[in-house]
Length: 189
Image (cartoon, rainbow, N blue to C red):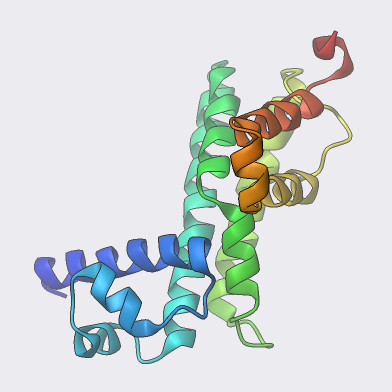
């Protein structure tokens, strides 16, 4: 693929990911094309249909989790305890809650082997980082990888407008509550 075509494809995926998180995966393909700065024909040349686009966004999200987890493993193995916080920040900023809700409704009932393979690799990397964080006494011993992703997913679901307006800073507070809840008991005092 030519470099300009690759950049255009990556931009479409980035924009689609943002729009899926904000509006759900049912957003009009025309809206994705417009926000990406391409015509609808270009969008469909890159992604044959909505399912193809959703799958590619899902793969990209899983790959990002895997890369962030691998970086955390490298940092934690080098005794950089800040690598755990970087991993949490990365996972939080990926908007996993909004994305999983949007994408989960659009993925086919039978998930492709490509998605399952990347999902398994991401889970292995995340669990490796989690175990290193436990060994460094950065996180509670009873937290599993599924617990972590589910917690971040629940925490990053969009708040209703009434909550957002009546309680400025609530999202940041929720993040801090989650971080405190992940810490070993001794660190919570």
